[in-house]
Amino acid sequence: MSAPRRCYEAGHRPKFLVVVDDAPEADRALYFATRRAARVGATVTLLATYSAGEFQHWFGVGERAREEQEAEAKAHLARFSARAREIAGVEAETVVRQGERAEALSGLIEEDQDIALLVLAASQSSKGPGPLVASIAGEAAGGFPIPIAIVPGHLSDQEIDALS
Image (cartoon, rainbow, N blue to C red; front, side, top):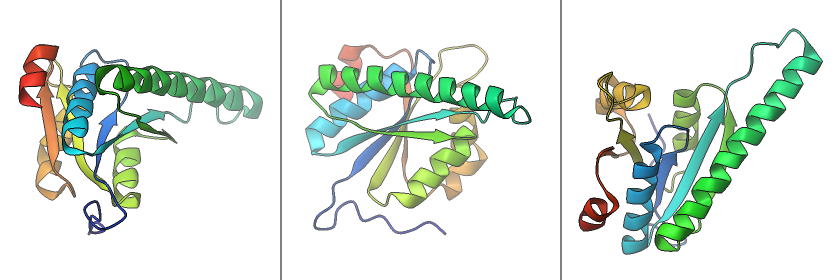
């Protein structure tokens, strides 16, 4: 059972959560979330994850790999934060988590009761909508603790503007 949402209580604001990665469709999710957040008075939270690494038994190598992965995740967040400001003047909150993306996502939603919407974008690939969209929108969707918005990856800025 997920903690109750508090995003519309006094002293709280709803947050739209976007998962940041290299996928081209991640920009579509960010674009929709920031435009919608600006329109309704919400904020945007950006989540970047990185793996624990393959070299855990070699402390120095493993630590260096984690540092590099964390730095890359922070660089992604910086680019997406700048893009959020560019799109709609929205200052995004950023979160970096180590570990498996779905677990980090679930943990963040459980911890932050102001997160009101998860915004994902579906890939245009013939291989499917992308692993995160497939896993969350599939079997897990019925038990997910918050609403999920899935933005079609092919939508242009102008098409998203009309919808958000």
